[in-house]
Length: 463
Image (cartoon, rainbow, N blue to C red; front, top):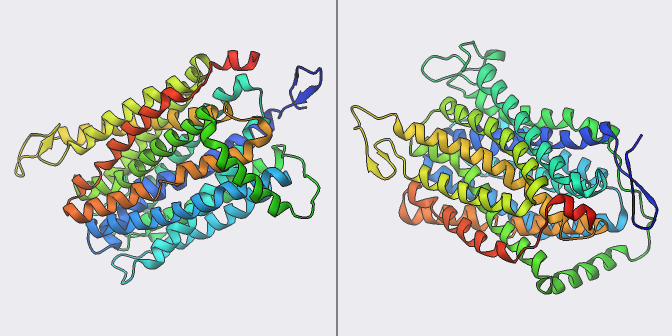
């Protein structure tokens, strides 16, 4: 049975039952390994360190792949979200884009060390990113129909925390069973890699792609079986044209909706900063701190545990104080963590000399791991609270359009962040200098938040 709530008109509004809610939450569990294994902790540093000719070239190529994929998402997301609102169901869109994401992830298996051309890998990364991100647009649009407003913060935070746990399990599988350490040939658990994978061929690192693809295929099944979808709206002639006209009106009127517009602009910038931090953190660790894939994986494990706890706790704080205070605190924490990472090199910590090449200090690595925990905790809370704050800005029947615009706002500068890092790295010939634009973007995003209105969940529910 679905839960229900009595609306102000006396009508009873049905919500999803427990199986439907868990099916929806498992979407984050199914998708998070893409961000954990591919974008951040395993495949990205492997690509930069072993596929590309050198780490600097790898960082530049990765920036182009993520940037151009993000540009495609920015162009199409608002239209597709608005069209889904006009037609009803979200699941067909989720299925179609998951198939695209599956194909892109699986193709990463063929990214062998030292391959002559990086173009096939960059195309596969872009295709995977487009599939995964578009599927998330339509999954997020289902959220307002699942639970009452007062429970949205907990729902979003719990789902995001579950996603981090999914990423953690995927990371443990890769590091503990598949990827071998260069010096020992053993996995992080001291075992021989499964399937005869070798350190020289880096099959364990490349296997992150097919594993992510299969993970999505398996764990999205409960969503399709148990989670209620928006009813189909009868097809009508000229629906595509009407969608384009309505979307044009919405975009034209956005600046007059001060709170919604400010939120979109702020989230556009701070999510771009966070995604760039995720995308280049592992590459930075491999190129500057000279960490191995296993060491970066440990960093990922710490970040995912902290992310799960942070998203869960952030959801409770969201329900108590509202999403905006949660977002403000998270931006401050992320800015500090990013600065701490940039301050660390093998011979520096907080921009001060430590140790020497002959007697290296462990402090820079410790700073990197602590900063990773802060990034995981704050990043999980930030993204979960952002979904709730967006729902506060629009009526439920406009959720698809709103989350399409949210994807646009998250991707309109998503190509600017990675490309800015690529260009800054090219100009300075330094990975360390190349990632500094991230901090500036966080500061700009924080300056826009005072114009965004939100209320604690219990007050919003009464309203």
